[in-house]
Image 1 (cartoon, rainbow, N blue to C red):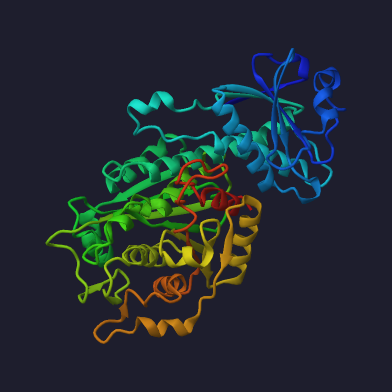
Image 2: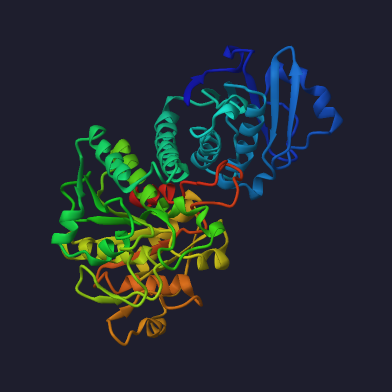
Length: 485
């Protein structure tokens, strides 16, 4: 979506809808100048009070004017603004409007940057649709906004607008990958997507480790999970050097299971319906790497995305068998549907041994258990370092990709005892999200690390607010904020 800045209301195109925001209890139009006279009847009636998400479309000689309620200013946050402006976008889409004018709200409580961030993210993130798979019904799909004209901003606001837009475009990429057909978004396709990033920045270097390399390096867990599929596995590595003079090196790891049948521990038909989303962690990591390159952040980051398809075949890996990991630890598989932690284990061990990270953070749609605990709006995470945990929580508060820390309770390691191997791969359903982290912790050595379980936040049961489709792109805002510190 393109934007431009207009110096005043009288420079606008009357054919475009004008969005005028109001805080609850401050609906008088005193700041609208000559435009106020066309809205006096509305203000006098008291029908529009500026409550959160309240809207009123007014037809006047000055064109269509959408009054938008922002709620009470004292309780406003960037998140409440995102939701208010997402409501405005949905109305404009129903009107089949492709361009609009926007008066930037002013507040006494929220910093102007937070206001602008909430408004612009609300508009951009709502202005998304996944129509690539539609046929005859495509013509019925509402159009997306193509242009926004800001009134009341200046050139000094453009860097922030451009930053927010770059992050939104990264989220679009993550959503597209997760929403796409699993027959098309394959491990090879994710690898090609990662390769394409090199064209955007000389600071990016992509390396694709193929099946032969995985066999040579003895990444037995990635190879085991992929055995039932005709699609080859890969380990995608993307290195970004934005600050060569710094010794700090952050490693991001994303689970890339492009489709999960559960393997021989077969899921139900209903349970499989959403399993094209099982690479959402990998999608978020790929999108984050493209975004930080677009933003030219001064940070050194390496991303790893182990990517496989967990399918069913005569060669599928088996419950009861033992497989050797890259680290040398052996794992007895007691649930082939706990496959994400296996491929992550090899990637984490590889990073710990070869990349010398200052911090490691992994994102994974790891457990349904985290949805039972925290629902679809908050991701659970575990960390072995308090400073890293604090940095992630700060990034969460600023980005509104919400997090809640869970304990890395060492006593739960008992659940992974095996009679014939070093570890079981599943410790049972109770405290399942924490136990998933406990298993992964066995492969990070002494590295400072955090595991974020995004099973609930990455793919919703239905679209809401500024996440209009099931795929949300969760994690991109969080990680970009974390890396921008």
